[in-house]
Amino acid sequence: MIPRYSRPEMAAIWSPEARFRIWFEIEAHALDAMAEIGTVPAEAARVVRERGEQAIFDVARIDAIERETRHDIIAFLTHLAEIVGPEARFVHQGLTSSDILDTCFSVQLVRAADLLTADVDRLLAALRTRAHEFKDTVCIGRSHAVHAEPTTFGLKLATAYAEFARARRRLHAAREEIATAGLSGAVGTFANVDPRVEEHVARALGLRPEPISTQIIPRDRHAMYFATLGVVASSVENLATEVRHLQRTEVREAEEFFAPGQKGSSAMPHKRNPVLSENLTGLARLVRASVTPALENVTLWHERDISHSSVERVIGPDATIGLDFALTRLAGMMEKLIVYPEGMQANLDSLGGLIHSQRVLLALTQAGLSREDAYEAVQRNAMQVWEQGGDFLSNLKNDRQVTEAISESDLTGLFDLGYHLKHVDTVFRRVFGVDG
Image (cartoon, rainbow, N blue to C red; front, side):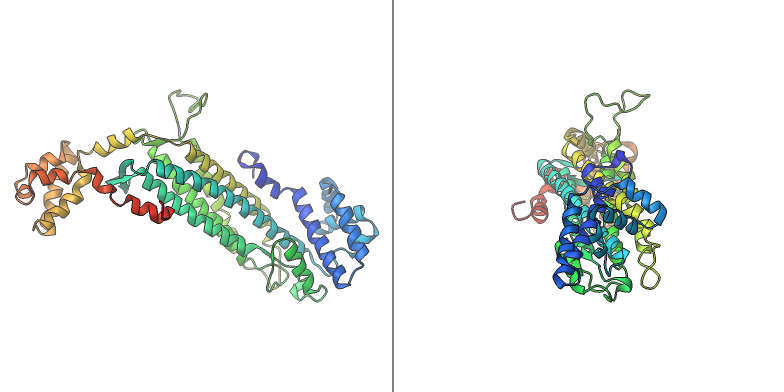
């Protein structure tokens, strides 16, 4: 991922320095286990760990060796031997490259999931605060982008909160799915490495032993992980798109914070554009682009091939770094979101009361009209306002079919916005808990 969309904490997980350090930890833990079992000298394990822990692995040197060997693990082991000395001959005994690569990838994906979960927690806190702030702020709800019935801005934000609460649970499940270590040797038979080595390494790294691996950890685990990132990215885009629509000049119910000194357009000084939410839409597309390759990686030849390798070297960093940046940006955007209750009220009033049509329809049916007759009467008066302007309530009061069924005072009562708020507390209790 390019630096523009990278945060240091997540990018560090995917740095060469971090990767080589994890590789060393896997090898050192494996050597410790072998020493406990008695297959390698304990003194050799101690020397390897002490000298490796004190070393700073030379990325340029490892890259230079790899250009000759054309094998990344062998290049690392060669450099490690330069650091450790003769005891390095005991390193990597019975293991194969995938044991190191796959277990390292699991560690990286687990660490990435932890950062993403923290990102979601920040976003949830912002959504919870803003939802309660605007719990009773009435605005128009839209279906097909057309005015429907009143809702509240707090309910909009509570909807987003519930969605990202589900995202958090999915990230936790994805973390659990990917948190396995595989050190079973060539083709996964443990022929040259004791299963206790895998168990020791897994425990030391906070992972679980993979129940059965071939020469690799099964890629359905990775597919589930990246599919989860794609779903979370879609939730990011969902909320970002809502903000983009609400910031439209014709709507202007909410907008991104516009900082002092910020410029919206190189040509038009008056512009305040929804650049953050548009950026989030683009980043969501990028994260979702990792899902199909991850699904295709599930199918590999026999006990292993490396058709998945090049894919994962790209999508691992890009998807996690991109989503980390997007979630953080979205949290900041919601923390500072500017809300215009007066704009919401103006939009509520803009159609002359048509937003109350369902209440009138229901009242007419309860007064004895068939649903078909009631619908025709309400629609007849509504379309007059829609096409010519005016006031819906006044039209209804001048319609004999309507006033013979409902008194004028009762008609007026049907236009109370407060009617639509009566179950807001119930919904908030469902979303946020007993105390709402």
